[in-house]
Structures are given as structure tokens and as C-alpha cells.
Image (cartoon, rainbow, N blue to C red; front, side):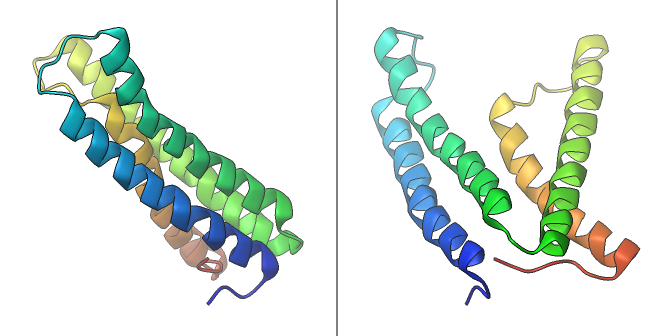
Length: 137
């Protein structure tokens, strides 16, 4: 279980947001047929999961703001910086490949999941560079 109040609140926020994300992606997949035209209805339904993604970002920002331990806050921010740098490098590199070659297009949907995976890489970077991967909320 989470060790401090900020971590408990973070987990308490992330669980319902995760469930909402899964439900809205499934619902949008069910409602919108493959290769549907971009009508106001399909766009609105397709953007509902983005609200949950925004909720993830908000919950992470609240977690950072609520952390009282400056060392743990620094570890979390370093993880986010590594994730951001990795995501920007991968997205920019692949975008350049798409621009100049015939590599397959990668949907922008994958940017946020890549960033989330980058958090794990950031935790490893913390562990390798300062010997502490930080708490696991």
C-alpha cells in the first residue's frame, strides 16, 4: 500500500481514472465503426477518452504538488523529465522518418503510452544514477 498521504490520494485518483479510460475507449470502439467519417458525433465520442487522459495528467500534477518530501518530489520530476525527453526524441525521430521515407505512420494515440513507459525508464535512470528509483505509488 502507498506509504504517504500524497501517494494514497494519487492511487485513489488513478484507479477511477484508469477505469474510466478503459470504459470510454471500449465504448468509443463499440460506437464508432472502423473508418468512420469525422462527423461532430464521431469526433465527440472519440474525444471522450482524452478526458480521462487529461485526468491522468492532472492526477500526476496533483501528486507532485502534494508531495511534502522534496527528495521524493525530485525523483518523480526526474522520472517525468526522462519520460518527456524520451517521448519527444522518439516522436521527433519517427516523424522525420515519416517525412523522408515510407515507414509506416504511427498514430498519435501512442504518444501518451510511450510517455508512461518512459516513466519506468526514468525510474531506472534514477536507480542507476543516484541509487534510488523512488517510491512506487
